Amino acid sequence: MNVRAYTPEWESDWNEFCVECDEAWFLHTRDCIDYYLAHSPETVVDEVSFLITSAKEIQAICPLSLTETPTGRELSLGQSYAVRPAIVNESDRGIRKTLQKKIFERIDTLADEHDVSRTRMMFSPLSPSERESTRTHNYLQRFGYTDTSVNTRIIDLGKPRQRLWDEMRKGHRRNVSDAESDLTVTVFDQNSITRRDFATYEYLHYKAAGRRTRSERTFQIMYDWVKDGYGILVRAEYDDTVAGTAYFNVFGNGATYSSGANDPAVDLPVGHVIHWHVIKWLKEHDYEYYESGIQWPRGQVLVQPSQKQRDISYFKRGFGGFDVPLFRGVRYYDSDRASEDGSEKVEQFASQSFPP
Image (cartoon, rainbow, N blue to C red; front, side, top):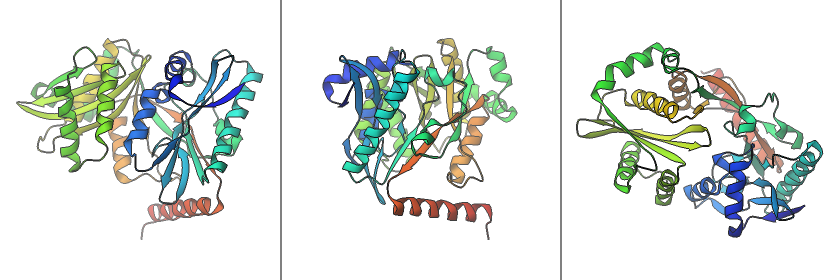
């Protein structure tokens, strides 16, 4: 087995591996990796993704970037957690154990070579192996990672449409019923999207934030995702005004919410209507699972979400579904970085749990 740094000639094989591998999802693809590298280019020092091959066939992939942060270098994927490595389906327990050992040894070597103070990694809850798994533990801990897991919310789209409606929170159903007739909702996929339509999402994203929050390149990548069948854009209009837009990634038989923005001048529950429409659209197009997003916890020392994050979690929970583990972990290579991160989290925990 050979450990190889990723180079562009492997792009096609890498993406084909992602389609076939049960441990991979869209987050593993070159399309998604390019987005994270472009999101905050000023912080990404280099891409250090790698793959393991045998007889020129990919056995495992590991998306990874070397990122500069205010408190030191880390291995992650841009400013986000890196997605955990994906290993070929046919490998038996012994080969899988060997591949995992090689992967995490390579990560530790990269950390040493580049003076890295920590690595952050997470699982992909929509990969086939995770959806069908009875896994009850975070295997990253075996390789020295501190557990920072949270839960994420998944809706089973195999349920009858009426049941999906009934399982929504009562207030959500009322908001959808009250506003649905006032809004015209359009779903743009690879067969209908145009650059002009996509520009409304870009503009509203900028208008809602009051500033440009990420590079222009990321919007072009997201447009290309729709054209390639990896994304859909949903737009809600009120009279002649674009009241809200939302973007969703699709891959295999799963979908996940990516981002959205509403016009603050439109006083309607636009987000409620958009999410209900996308749930119906995904079901009609034979997707089986929709991940609405992380359910940020309270009272945890190592995970300290903001009030805004908890409010968003509450909103998403109102569309029904069930919680599943989103396993995550952080491995420290520097005692000062570990101490600084730990002290900061403990102070945040104490101030939030016991306010003055």
